[in-house]
Length: 497
Image 1 (cartoon, rainbow, N blue to C red):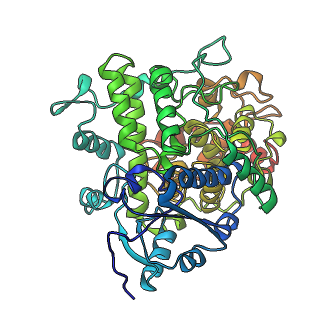
Image 2 (tube, rainbow, N blue to C red):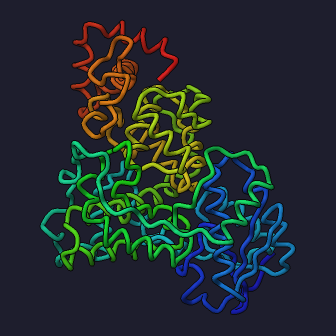
């Protein structure tokens, strides 16, 4: 059954397609349909603040679009579309499951046509041309092509400063003798009557969620996103790069932008963020290393994860090359940070519990590192990250978790597992000084679970690691440890962290 597309065909917006790149421009004349699906809210055990953000974003879009917009509340999307009574246009959704769902809706005439995704810089078809028949992917190659294609931080055909990558300038340990970076706080939106009603509605619905309720910390409208971007560029970007990989127990946001939520809701376009950062460099308001680090996150890594999600396909989450089968512990799934002793792990879980957000090093080198060492199921872990994080939409996590964090794809995305002992965490954080565990010890009551866990991981996968030139030396070091058998026995019996 085929529906006809006319100038007056309404445009249906998913909750992560709420910005002017979707409903403006050539579609600015169209009526807009927004849907709150009770079944979608209850489908998984989401973080409470994530549900708040999604509902707040939908309802603010309804208010801001005025007479253009209709907001329907129904049990399912299909029920709402049938009640609406007219076929709709929709842009490509952002997950495999949603794409199949839209295809079914198109077959029965509820969707008239599906348009390309406008909320990323690079179209999907252009990435497929770039990918060609590659079997191994390298982000640096993609990133440089993105810089050239969109003419970002370029001087003609050369990168600004004659270097593509300033990573080595962006790996400083946290400053000593201070508890915070001391930079201006990030933008925080003011909650309004819509947020108050969302909170009341979520209380009334009694949905099974994880995490604490709390004030809305992230932008959910285009105007809020612009203010959040401006505050980051004006006050926080200059110190972003240096401490991008550092962790401080009393400074959860540090100099990070906190723009992942508005980016993933579609209310901030990545090129707007990138161009604002480049302008800060061009005017001398921010150093090149900081700006390049931010551009790399947005135009490089974020776009790369999006495109590889589609390129690898829906079966990618089944990858489990390291044969990790351990079920997620209850304390982890329930965000029970108070039951954790290791300061770095406790603070990371507290961040997820209290805000549904931690920065990328806590995700990769604390939470991901712990899960990798302990052999947690990568598929369960992917689901957890997608539901417990407020910015964890369905496309975001498979490549980040399966490929980058857990090395479960066997090296398609990353050349080596991101495993590290307590020494790394001690160098890049201020956690270890107050911790009951000693990052230098792998054996004993005060042995660091990350240090001991690291050697346990290396021993478990020594055959694979010995074949990788980047990890061969680690295996040789492990073979020279005189207490490795005792460490293995200790970690096998470990029940607390």
